[in-house]
Image (tube, rainbow, N blue to C red; front, top):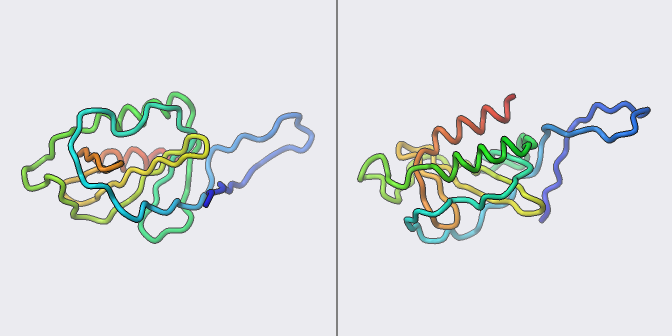
Length: 148
């Protein structure tokens, strides 16, 4: 299924250029049916590409707010994600999830990259079976992007 963003636009019909969309609502993609086994790794959590849109999708949500990203903000969010610590904040956290999951969605072209954020005490972030920690700060940063 392809998600089609919807947004309210203010456009002057006498203008020769199309309006720029900065934010709106879009369908949340379905999370993968099976999560790969958790593994540690030191490489980047997400590919270093220019993403054009960010969205947060809590469980059982059909449509949520999105924001279009400029090149600078895309680079900043990729750097934040890939700089998340690989070591858990506590030995009890290794691979454990303990809160409600929220999916952070980054879109580049027709591809959606889904990072599962765990809002529990360990604050893990999962993508393609790789885990990092510090999801709370990443969630707050992304929520602020969506507000402003």
